[in-house]
Image 1 (cartoon, helix red, strand yellow):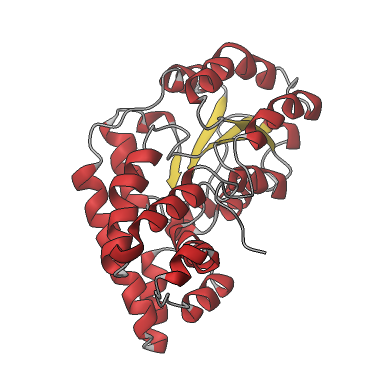
Image 2: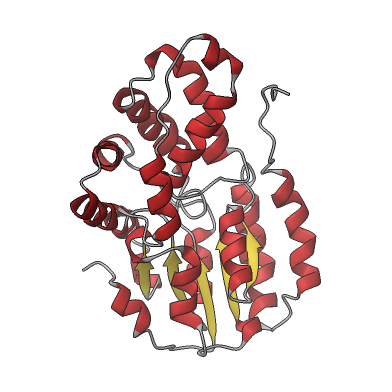
Length: 297
């Protein structure tokens, strides 16, 4: 059974430590196939972008894999895609008319549970053809992912780390991926039994996941968030938690260090701001703000 928002509200600690864990790109080596083989092709198809597919691929991959927006919600990524495409002179020279997606932008600013159920409710309320098209795109992505992305495994040292933490820490999956996909991936790889709850995009954003499960339940230095994106870091900061980065491009080494060194330090209350800061510089360097293509004046 999938986790509900009430499950987050009713969560009760079994241990004195808490670890929130992102999933895609953090636990599973799934970001590349999901975005390159599913999200991007579906985006080209559904938004009729074949004449500029080269630039769509470059921008989509930068936003979702190689930039400070890595790991953001899919609807926010779609908005960022069209924003950056609109800035590229190569796209303008081809006379492409890009969607403005004003209804989507307004909805993402008003809603925190950025998933298909909330989008369907907004469509029922407004009748927006634009949002209906966005929903059809999102549903097509959901259909493509389980069909194409099969057999993806956790990074080395993930399972061993979960086993090492389990006797002393409550663990919750904190993700912007749809809940059904999360539940399937964790179940199919046999690691779902290590975590208490699996929270996806339908239950709110990552900050809400952490607030609902940790507020008033743990000492501040007993809460840790593990993630591979700056959004994970921001969620940790919002609730006063420590953060452990899984560095994009160095995921296996990051998990090995976590298993061999950081778990013990954290459980001994020694994972201080100074120790955290030592790891954040490489993490932030791996996620640039500026795209690699020339920015027009």
